[in-house]
Image (tube, rainbow, N blue to C red; front, side, top):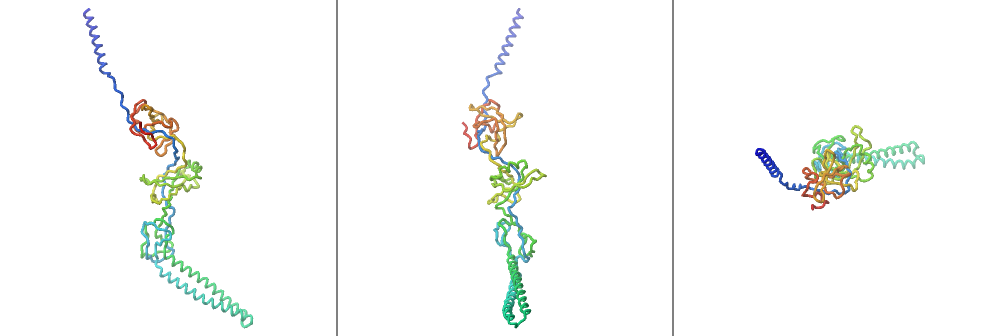
Length: 374
């Protein structure tokens, strides 16, 4: 009996010790601290429907300035790379040979005009003499033919004078368009050839053009809204500050069958010179404006195995995971097709530490149109 009582006592002691150990290892846990998060409010707004592309800048006009006469270049009246105006004197070719040619043509014209005046007087005299039979009809006809020939000679002389005067004007080479001058290809003292030697190239960069290609599948939407002004933004690669605004000005008349794209061009004022011929730019063509769509910042949307979702913050500052359908993205915004309502507060930073039911502490509210954290 005593051995039995001892075993019972020992078993009770073991149970008591086990219960005490369990009580000591399971203290009352304090609640988890709130998770700091940034939030934004789902709002309805007008969002543009845009097509992104990569384009290149090209001048509105490009002119290779050449001389229409040959001669020695005596003066250059501009600096490389400077802006020039239409009609501005760019080059001076030695005018002396052309001045001499003009004087010679004028002298020949004066001589032949004097001969024509004399021949015309002979015609008047012979017209009276032939009626009195003092001269024969053949002599009279000969005088008239001589006067007519001299009249033709005078017309030819006048054309020669005009041509010589024009060549003298060509000795002064002027800018055919306004734009920016490129590198100077000749120096004073060089012999310039006529109609074959480029002296300088001028690019018109105000306004300027940007050409880009978009998939042919987007052509129906572009044509549907082509009657309205379609804004275009261009941003040089690597320069986020140099954003230029223009309008669509050209849609090509055929789709490129090798690439499946359609060529477009946009016109930009470019008064500040942000766009430069030949550079590559990121282009955004606004096709139309979509009204009253529900939006949240793009960083609020998380991609999971079962689709897209956001964390919605309830009024009691608890978070819950909410599946959403995203229609598209535009300019840092996600357009929500379903799953949210206007005014819902969604988490934009700190989602990685959240689970449904977790308490949150709002540390920041994004967007100027968002309510302040309460």
